[in-house]
Length: 423
Image (cartoon, rainbow, N blue to C red; front, side):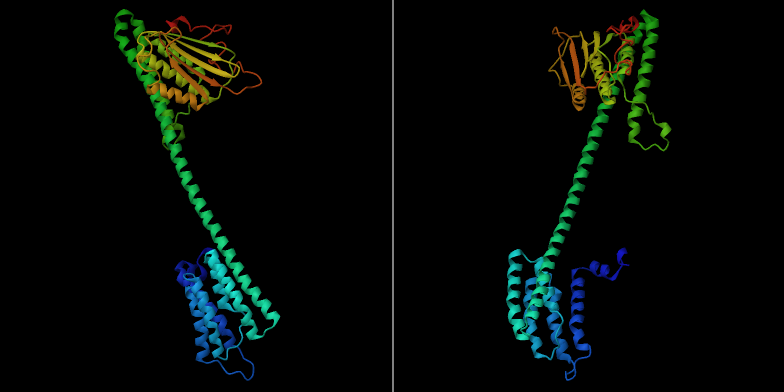
C-alpha cells in the first residue's frame, strides 16, 4: 500500500504540514500516556484527569513545532516541571524534548540552534541531579539528546541535497528546452538556406532558358528544343530536391512515398554544369589533383556553393563565360568559380547568397573568398576546406570529383568539358 502512494502515511503527507504535525503529536501523546494505563506498582495511586491533563499540556506545543521551533522547545521544557504536581510514573524517554530539539536542529538557523542546544545541555545536568543523580542516567540523557540533535542536522542536510537535486533537474530541463529551441531554429535556417539555393538556382536557369527559347526557335530550332528540355529537367530536379528536403518535416505513414536520394555530391557537378551550358552559357569545368573520398557534408557544401555561385553569375553577370576549377590537395579541397562579367556591382559580400555560401563553408571548417577576378575583371568565388590527413588518398572512389571524368581527359589530366557542354 505504501509503495503505491495510497497508504495512511502518504495520505497524511498529502493532507499538508498541519496534518503531519497533529499526527506526530498524537503519537507522542500515546507514548507518554502508556505508563499511566499499564499496571502500576503496588501502592501507586491510579491516574486521574489531572495526570492526563498535564501530559497533554506538555505535548500540545508540538503541533506548532515547524512554525516556531525555538518557542516550542522553550514551551516543552517549561511545561515539564508541571509533572511534579502529579504522581506521574517515570517516562522511558523525554519524547517531547527530544522531538522539539530535533526540529530546532533541522530547521533553525545555525546560531539559533547552537544556543538552543547549549541551553538544553545546561538544563540536563540539574534535571538529572534532581531525579536520580546517577552517572548512568546522565550519560543516557546526554546521548539521546545528542542523537536527536545530530538526526535533525542530517535531516536538514538531506533536505538541502534534495532541493539542490530538484533545482538542478529544473535547470537541466530549462537548458535542454533552450538547446532544443536553438536546434530547431538552426534546422529552420538550414532548410531555408537549402530552399533558397534550390529554388534560386532552378528558377534562374529556367528563366534564362525560357528567354532564350524564342530567339533560338527562329535562329536554331534544335537549340530551342534543347533549351525546353533543359527547362523541364531543371524543374524536375528542383522538385525532387524539394521533396527530399521537405519530406523530413512531415510524418508520412508510408516511407515509400519519400524520396530517399542522398545529398548532392561532387559527382553531380558535371551534370550541374551541363544544365547551365544547355541554356547557351559558356562553361568550363576542370579537376586537378588526386581525388579522394570526402565526407557527404563536405561534398554537399561544395555542390551548393558552386550552385549558388553559378546562380549569381546568371543573375548578375549577364552573358559571360564561367569556369569552375576543383583542386584536390593532400589535405585540402578547393573550388573556384570565376566569370568574366562586369565584376561586383556593389560592396562585395553583402548579398544573401554570398552570406549563405560563407556560412556553409564555415560550418564545415572552411573559408570563402569573394571578389574581382585575378586581373580585376569578372567575379571570383573560392571555397577552401581543410581535410583530415589519411594514409593514402583514394583515387577511384569519387567519380566526377577528380581523376578521369567528363571534365578531364582520358589520361586524368585536367581539361575542359566536351565541346557540346562548353559551347
